[in-house]
Amino acid sequence: MALAKQLNLRPRQVEVWFQNRRARTKLKQTEVDCEYLRRCCENLTEENRRLQKEVTELRALKLSPQFYMNMSPPTTLTMCPQCERVAVSSSANTSSPIPANTTGINRQPAHHQRPMPMSSWASIIPPQPLDAHRPRT
Image 1 (cartoon, rainbow, N blue to C red):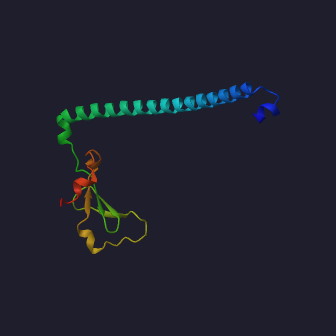
Image 2: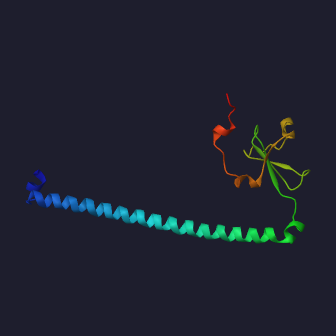
Image 3: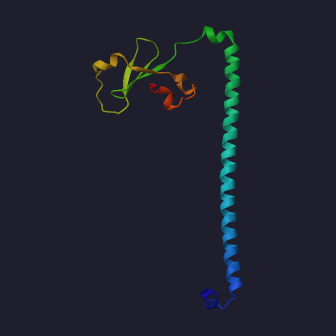
């Protein structure tokens, strides 16, 4: 206990000082963690309220007969996997490519005749594990 001799303190006093310091550090870290978790809880609670409100509105809209009569054609996105371009269309005939990698070139290659559709409902469908898409051997 060279430190105790340098400070003219008993070794037990130095031990207690370091124990207290570790306890204070741990307490402060616990307070920081608690505050972070409290904010996360508030954010998740607010998000939960918003989603519950949205579900209620969608259920009410689904039950409304006007919902089916006033439906406009859905906007769809299609993406070409070869050149990473996205095409936006509100109906089957209107599509304009938007480059995902802003090259400034707006030519449509021959492989754009069959782009891969991306549904706006894709985010609702739960993802499957990658193994589900592998061929069985």
